[in-house]
Image (cartoon, rainbow, N blue to C red):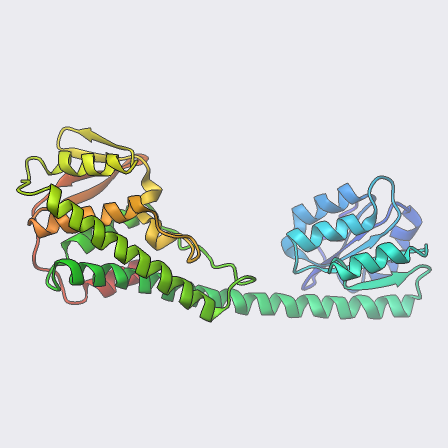
Length: 333
């Protein structure tokens, strides 16, 4: 592989893959002034170049007939792993069936037959580079838009936790929200990016509404069960009571002295972090219901990160929180 021109200034680089050394030199002479040119002599070398420089590559040009796999396999690989790259197939042979198949599958943007007309080749590559720049700008705008939508989605989920607490145990009760969100932060919640190839914004709203409603219904049902079963629990047995409740639904927790140690840390942020099309588990509903049940009994837990685990210990029950506390949480996430 020759990467000698990779340091040239350009908005995007071009990968050219051909097993014929003469074609490589010819291509570099004709196109090298337009952008940095990275070259390979086989499909495997082309894949390696993509994997090493994919974020900097704007255009991929591949010959069709090479030792081993054909060039359309490389273009298929690029379309799946680096869809922003503009893909061009070139060959001296009349392989119409394979070319048409590649076009129909979306693997190539353009087909150029050898021998090349230099002026036409340069024009094709200029247009391909311009298209690559447009795709880059579009992707950047899309990422910014998605970032805003993801933050809005996460804020809506945090708001729902507060709504459930207010509805089920009273609007003045904020302690379970505080404990829940503190634990989610310790679990390093990462909001999952929606699959925008499958969802549009209205789909996302519908999925979020259905998911949140189902979760709220489960939490209410589990809270009712806890109220019936756990009557008269005190701070002295709160850890044991919650541990038993969680273990019944398969959550792995450990009791150490007065602490409830949660090893499956990611599960603490399931509702906030999982995608909209993934239903919230019964286990997670039991966790939030447990916090609401504790609060209704004027009991509270404080989460602390300890290595790869989160430990919960009984703490002083609080009734006073700043009016903007929920907004502070939303900003923190």
